[in-house]
Length: 503
Image (cartoon, rainbow, N blue to C red):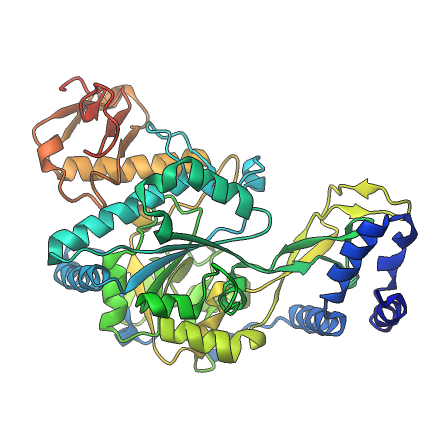
């Protein structure tokens, strides 16, 4: 170990404090710590920190540079007037799914800290009648969309599920899937890979020590996807080349915490292909100017997501001249994207290093001068993050599909209040209630409850289709939990319309 060279490097880059506890470490600990420090490009990290902090300080309103996404690149899956288009997009999507050209990629590097748990978010159960976790719901939706594609085309194929984890979630996620036999999916179709981590920094750019001989690290945001996909040649690692070898041409990318996410959504996939798009974004229509959500726009001629804080009040309130009932800048980003593999390859090989960082102020445990680990109660440092949608600016063609919020977006972020397990459970129940009623089912005793709890297994229906045989002409009591099982699920002696008086 060349201690002197490392010390010089640390001093030149204002990080010499990292050696403060060196003498307290064992020989083995020193070796591990030395290797970790040698893998950090301190000069590059300092440049990234300074550039990101300066950009944050000079954050400006972008009004004069902004334009909506051109109407020809925007579609809507909302309303009866768009049903013929939706059907056509679905057919196209099911066709390419049956040809084995579609994969889903899950961004699952985060833990459920804000939910009050220490395990990965995907393992969370919001309290549905079935007790299913987010991971299980998503796995079963993949199984169902594979079945729908087979029934539509007569060709059988599978949809690989690529799951990007982090050092904080990889082991538990792997063990969880193994213990549950991959929820019916083939083990070969569920492939985990790990994103890189970055050192956590103080507000003035010093690397934080988590322990006397360990740097505090965190995943580099969901935009770390592109660096991770560039790790070609690593055994069993997901990369552009492994996707191409499998014949994948289109990838549906999404975040783990949306309980309503439609896996490999054939409508979305078909829509983006119809628009010849390199990448696409599902969006929910923003109805209130003050809603704190980023919007998909064109800025200086390039596609991007701008945060609500980057748009003036006047511009955020501007109405669409073609439809005065809607906001002009209304396409709210929900981190639900379509990317062609060719576009992914272009990002990984040509643009990944130029993606900008964003600042996330966090409460980061640290080691004090005496070597004692301190857990702060207020934000004391920053994590540098990249966002998955920051690649939009490199796309020549981008497609935006507006979807109904109540049908497709219910994030799970907080223990209580908005975006909580309670709201996720309620939103899924409301959607499935709508499916049952549309298929001819009827709920009774609705005046006796403030809300209805019902759930339809993804193995029975992907998006409300095919329910007539199970619900038409039947009554379901609103005072009981309703759970409609799929044929493939374990039978417990209960009928499909569980706890329903009619059954």
